[in-house]
Length: 305
Image (cartoon, rainbow, N blue to C red; front, side):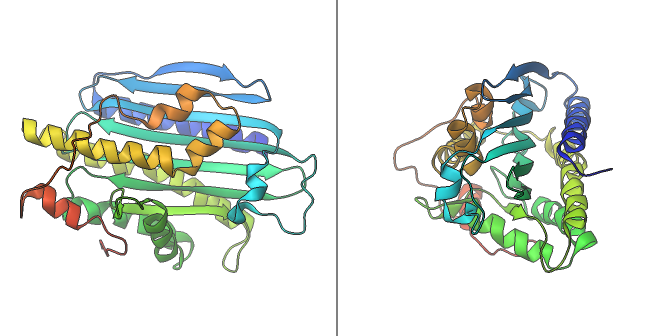
């Protein structure tokens, strides 16, 4: 496949199709509803949302391909600086697939994936993305399985990628005002182009493998946990953990900020928010409870493998 924005766009659409089919099959009830939208400044997307299923309460598998004048905030943020390259009147093109799934059961984890490609008319281009898991209750066996799948993808391309991108995920998916990670992390990378390890074409192959790892990894976790019985107290805990998820996405998430700053479709940008969440004032877990144990593991640098 020739690497250009047209072929990348088509590949991402096919990925969206395949992931939606896999999730619908495992859920067994709900179907995705599609909405096509256009952006006045350029481009648009296919928003697909699934609700009220056997396993999935609310989820979205979103594709977008947008273009236009490069927003100023990209040049103001240190990590997005493009030193030595003029950005006056620069245009951009960005495409990607973004996924968030909120399950019915508190024993099935929330999952998020995003893979994206970005280029500017001045020649700057990069790849970004990652997958991370947010269990309401941390199960070590599931955490090991999840991280092993991601490590296998990384190791296929370069042995440095898993430890590097795992650390990046730990640092990125951190709720600073709570001093806790959003979940058990995963991998995260941004502005990946050529580096000391791989050229752009090789990194593009890695980026594709990350996208294709989503469906088999999450379907396995859905299948393992979807039929387990849970209590009303566990459901209440799920709502509290969803509240933490909302806090992160609205305060820290750069994808949300990018969508808002570039006049993205608001319903699609905020698709990641759950239907229901809860905030109980000064909630305290019981000592040695499953909830307290989960909180104790929401830390950076945990070796899950």
